[in-house]
Length: 247
Image 1 (tube, rainbow, N blue to C red):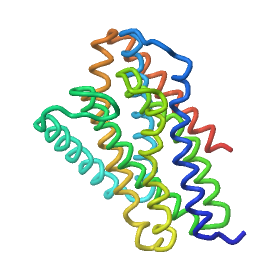
Image 2: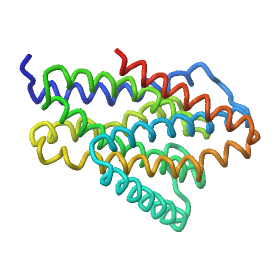
Image 3: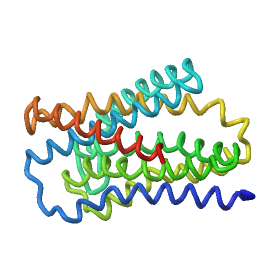
Image 4: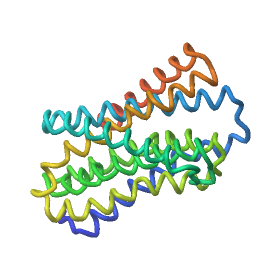
C-alpha cells in the first residue's frame, strides 16, 4: 500500500486521541479519599516507571551513548524546570493552584516532551519497511491509554474535572502528529536523534516518580502499600506492553 503524508498524520492523531481514553475510568469514580489519592499517585508512579523503562530499552537498542546522554539531559531539564516553577510563585493550571498545579505542570510537560520522540517514531516507521508504520502506530496508540491514565491519576484526585483531564492528556500527545509529518518526509535527518529524545523523556519521568509521586503516595498511605501499588502498576504496564507487541 502506498503511504501518503495524510495517512501518517491521521495515524499519529489517532495515537494522540487514545491518550484521552485513559481518563475515562474516572467517570465512574465520584469521590476519592486521601488513601485513594495516595494509591493513585503510586499507580501513576508505577506506570511512569514502566514507560521510562520501555523508552530506555528502545533507545539503547538504537544508540547507548545518545540514550544515556538523553537521560542526563532530561534529569537536568526537569530539575531546572522545578526550581524555576518553585521561584515563580503561585502557578495555576488545569483548575489547580499552588503545589498541585506545579506537580500537574511538571507531569504535563514531561509527557508532552516524550510525545515528541513518539511522533518521530511514528514518522520514521512509516518511512521504513511495509507494514512497520501500522504496527508501530497501533503499539503507541494502545501504549498511550495507560499513559493517559497516569496523567488522570495525577490531575483528577487534585480537583481537575475528568473531561479536562482527558483533554490535557490528549494535549500532551499532540506533538506526535506534529513530529510524525516532518520525520516521515525527512527520515534520515530525524532518525539519529530518536534515542536522545527517548532518553530525555525517560530521565525526566524517573525524577518525577521519585521526587514527587512516590513521596506523596507514602504521605497519604504508607510505605508498604505505596510500594506494592507501584510494583503492581509497573508489572501491569509491562504486561500490557508485551501483549501489544506480541500482536
